[in-house]
Length: 207
Image 1: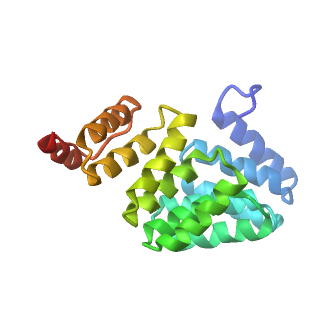
Image 2: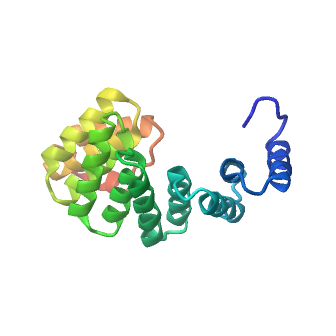
C-alpha cells in the first residue's frame, strides 16, 4: 500500500475511483486485487484479478494470484490451470512452476511435481519454498538422503525456515537417526513451525 494513504480502505477507495474513471486499466484492477487480498476479501480479490487478466491476457502475475485463490479453496485443478497459463505466458517464471509442483505433490503426482519444482529452482536457485517442496517430494519417494540434502540447502540460506527443519525431522526419523530428528523438531518449533503432535509423541517414544 502506498505510504501516502492512512488506511487500506482509503487506498481501496482511491483505486475504485480510478477504475470508475477508466475501466480499461488492468494494473488498477490488479492492485485492487492485491489490496483486497490484504483485506482478506477473497471474492472481491478474485473479481478484480479476473478483470485484470480480461483486460491484459498476458498478465502472468494475475493468473498466479487467481491460482493462489483456487489453492485457498482447495481447488488444486484450478490452481494448476491458472499457473500453467502464467507459465505459458512468461518463460522461465519460477513462481508458477513452484505452484504447479506444489499442486501435483498434493495430488500425488510426485514425478510431475519434481519436474516443475526443478524448473523453478533452476530459474531461481534461492527459491526456498520450491526447494522445501522438492524435499517433501523426495520424502514421499522415500529418498530420505535427497530430502535431507535439499532441506540443508534451505537451512544454509535461511536457518529459521521451519518447514525445512520439519522435513529434516521426518527424514532423520525414517532413517532411525532419532537424536538428529529431535534436534530438527526443536529447531522447527523455535522457528515458529507447528510440528504435528502425533509425530512429536512418536519421536519421544524412540528417544
